[in-house]
Every structure is written in C-alpha cells, then in structure tokens.
Length: 84
Image (tube, rainbow, N blue to C red):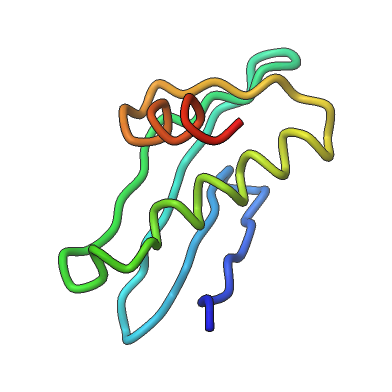
C-alpha cells in the first residue's frame, strides 16, 4: 500500500509521513511554470519509492492546474525525463 501524499499549497510542498518520518518535495511557481526545487527523503525511508510518489503527485498537480512542470531538483528532473 502506498503512503498518503498530502499537498500543503500554502507552503508549496508535498509531504508523505510514515513511520514517524516526513519526506517532502518543495516547489515554486513562476507564472505558469511550477519548478520542483527540492526533494528530501530521510535515510530511514529511502529505497521505498517515496521520492517518486512525491514527484508524481507534483506532476499530476501541474497537469490538473495547467502549469508547465520543470525541475531544478536533480532527482525530479530525472524522474520527469523518464516518466512524462
């Protein structure tokens, strides 16, 4: 079962909380471009596909809201290049 991804629009981040740890992705919006600037997954959660779930949630949000999606974050950039 995938952990729940929560979108905190006020702070422009997506979060997953599991096992007492928080993984998150932060973004900025410039006009009609959403830029994923940082993805963080605590070492205790790595290797479980959590970062991919965060980027996928941000990308879906981009599509739903009509933003162009780009990534300053290297992980997110790779994910977007391989999955969109």
